[in-house]
Image (tube, rainbow, N blue to C red; front, side):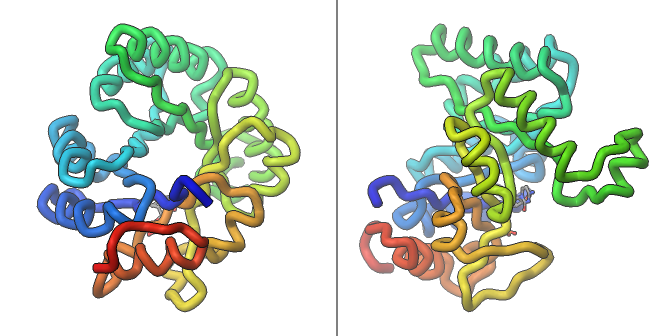
Length: 242
Ligand code: C5P
């Protein structure tokens, strides 16, 4: 294996904690995922700081969802941060996703940067059939997620967030879309609140392209060692032992 598929989810609002963790795990992961919790507390300056401290690719998990014009404008604003991946809700619709794609390409071109890979979120894992019904969607979660995946493919998205259990089916149906997979647990780890987990090798075998791993690394006594062990488990050579 060449590229390291592990993106460590740094889920904290604390800039000091985030930069320390980022520096600790940098040698053993492919990149870092920063989400709303961190962005709301620290903004673009915080993202720059973590990128600088680690030298790693940033996966900006903002799950954008608004009118097309506003999402396009948000894209223009984040392009200078040069995120490698950026999430948005497929539920925002075809026009919103297409506007995001256009804005990503235009702004990246102007900034002489590579456009981020746009990753669509279909149905959040916190939703079940009853929750969907509550917001007026009669279809079961699996059917609605597939419908949104088709919409994302039509809009030219680069990938989908999915569980490892859906990865094989999505690979068969949308082979060209990246599969970004959270809910990963090394065999020896606690499951926490993730219900349907797979180990890193299982998830890769099922068709995952990127493994989003948070607490098994960030809550470990030695985050660098935890990240290095996971990388070794999937046959990735990483930096020096630490
Ligand atoms: O700590 P843990 O490994 O469970 O972290 C998983 C990361 O992936 C968190 O940042 C979480 O928000 C995110 N995520 C998830 N399930 C999804 C989508 C994203 O756990 N369906």
